[in-house]
Length: 277
Image (cartoon, rainbow, N blue to C red; front, side, top):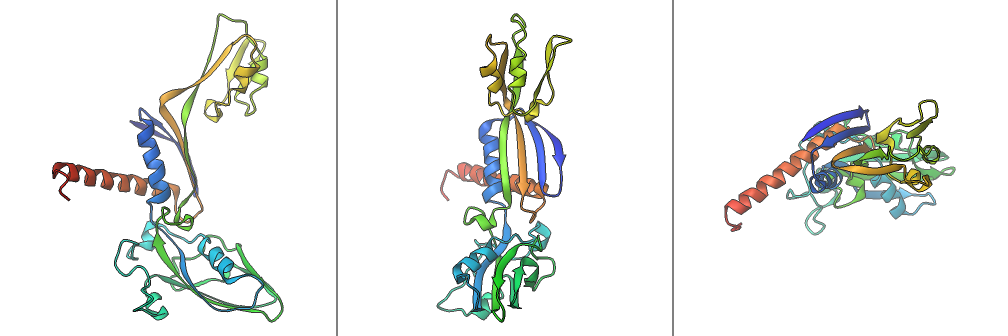
């Protein structure tokens, strides 16, 4: 298997995988979406809320606010599979719950728009990724007083713990021409993404950016004589990961591969032990 990075930024990575199979690529996609740990606000104690927004809606907004969740920042915090991660309402108080994660406090008086930057974190490394996410609008003399606990979780439990906003792949496009037929320039004009360009001087159709092709086959349908063919390379893929800024995309990919490796090792041990455990 060969991997080639095409582009990389703070919140997006695009790479090409060659000589792989669909089940393997799809497994990495799923691991990146649902098995990479991320921190998000889980428990909310609304002490006072004079705004027009319902408590449940406000708590939901807080939960979906992206928090800095790189692996270094969340190291040492309990995971959902650890004992004591969840509040035991019968034996524990809210004060006990404050020790289970990172505490955020919000106390504001209107008139004003309350933004994510107004959330005060007990850990300076774990804070909202963006300062300008509107949470609630307060009228004059309205007060909001909230205490919340952010915990590490997985995307398989809730979307707020999903580190990726886009995690998708497509098979590598392949465009060929039937040279025994007359050049049909209409097929290049039909491409909605500018992948093809007619060159009447050389009597050819040029492929400008094959990786931008979505394989919609508009060009094939526009060609009256079947001059162009659009397909894909069966074992080559273009993979794209985009995050909400809480984690670097490369870190998400590496952690997903690590989780996949651990699952494979567990399966191998299970098989070697005869399925006894």
